[in-house]
Length: 466
Image (cartoon, rainbow, N blue to C red; front, top):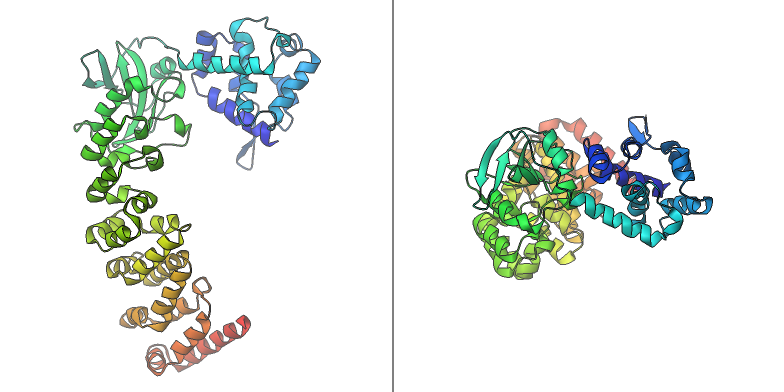
């Protein structure tokens, strides 16, 4: 069943966009019957979820006319097709897409192709050729061009803002859905489109070539001009999940072009894969100076090392950058597999007053803020637990915050919150609450009976943990 869902997911992603049917029929030569079949896979909705038929052989029979399969494929080869489509072990991963596409290939070259004349490898080669063919389609000239030309180039290329989120002509010419979250930008020459970008408020959500393929390197210089142009104010990329890998990425560029971006507009590196970018130490250091928050923790740590990272955490500009761009949780999460790095971050969270002031007041409710801070320390492992014991139970730093607010009850709730529990924590909480100073302050604020009730409750919890 997993194989079936994979096949259908792939075919839908290849075929189901609004104008793909026209391309299959008019440009490639697939019959209308096959194009309709590919774009209208049988499906039903149950409890708000889309599910598909469980029996692939029945789906094949109901999707094609009987004479299409029966007239071309003999019984043994029909079984082979169905087995390949359903069996992941036959050809890892690739078999799903290619085995399905080989059915579409049957009517691309002639209506009389005989499966008996093809080995499976030959069919897969033909399916690869089919992919190449659809990617290389020049869909034709845009007849009624409408929009604002925003950039021009001496060789005739230009970027045009279509000023709309859907363009049927762009869709047909480019072999994709022609839809976006914002305005569509099209790279053209003599009204022939080559790259489409989806831009909203300066953020690019998609940038693709024909048939949703990755833009060719021939167009990189035009793309760089677009994203670097000061008048257009392109901020960065925030890719949607549909065929994400087929978008243009900064790492697709040459080393010189990447260096230009690092020096002149580093914000464009936001949401990029830094492992694929493979920045030099010089480039990383430049980004640490200009825009440190844009770098993943791993890239920073690998570049500056243990001692260098400790020094960075003492740098007020770096710390403020972490706060302003809300990177603290991300750093702690990304450090979870590196004990050395987690230990450094745990100490930083415990000792840095700027970070604590920010985290203690992050939520409207001080109790929620402290609870979140404790959970953050917990994520750093054993070092974090040590610091929780210190700040929550062995010192009065957090206690003073609640005394100042006249709300020791909230502090007690933090002490006995099961999510905040650490080894020996209940006993330490009891010791703190029984101390003369704490007892006096609590009774003064909340009354003697409430104090006794809470002590009894914590004693019960303590006994259950023994």
